[in-house]
Length: 125
Image (cartoon, rainbow, N blue to C red):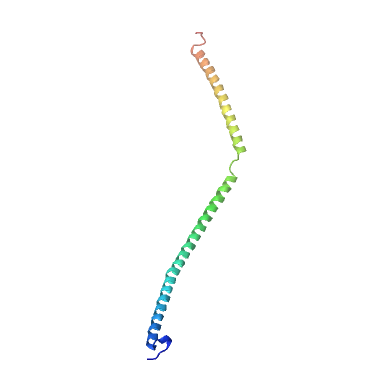
């Protein structure tokens, strides 16, 4: 038997070399499996995040367009001064209605007196 590497024979060196190669092969295979397993998962997560980002972008675009529509509507809405003028006009109309109501009340009393006079043919009661 040949003595080579530190007192080991060629068969022992082949055996340990084969075992070392199998261990390196197993570790490399496990490393590749881990990379593929979790590397692929990262791709899936990246794809999901990309889809989520595009969904959020479309939602924000919709909200932005809705908000700009609301802002446009608010620009045409009546201001405080406009509401004050409307309130003043309503108060004036309510006062005019009270005056008309008073005039009709007095007119109704006058008509009742005329009616009573005509029914009694001008006689005093």
